[in-house]
Length: 168
Image 1: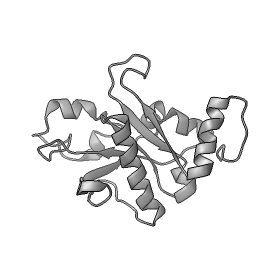
Image 2 (image 1 turned 90 degrees about the vertical axis):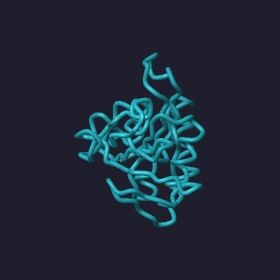
Image 3 (image 1 turned 120 degrees about the horizontal axis):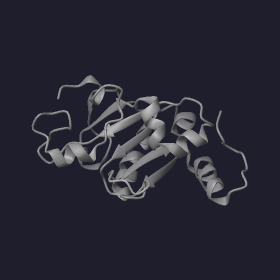
Image 4 (image 1 turned 45 degrees about the vertical axis):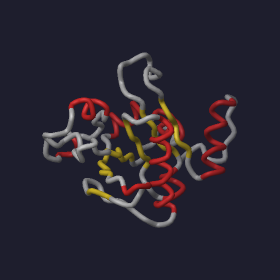
């Protein structure tokens, strides 16, 4: 179940429904401090990808909104073309410059706390959500011992067990 094709009274909500209908998915960007004045980093997430492409919705933390949206759009473009990624595996070739990414399944309870519009769009019914993790300049991911603390702090961990059980 989703809100695809439905009309709602609130024009702001209708905007999101129409975006998904037109493009297959939408990317919601949450700017630094926008999330109820918390000290959490910026993040962005998709809505509509699961029903449109059979791909999980995506969420990424700690990047400027335009960069996060571009990564999500690039990955979902690859999914729309038939590519699938594997959880917990280093993936290359999904975004420009061959930036390596790791996708990990987000915990449903934690995921819907952040992907609120996706949860609304799917009418509070379960949907798959994968978190995209990106490396620091030194190539380390948040679970790597040599990852700079500031990069680790930027990538809020929504997995069920610390970075999906990957080594830290």
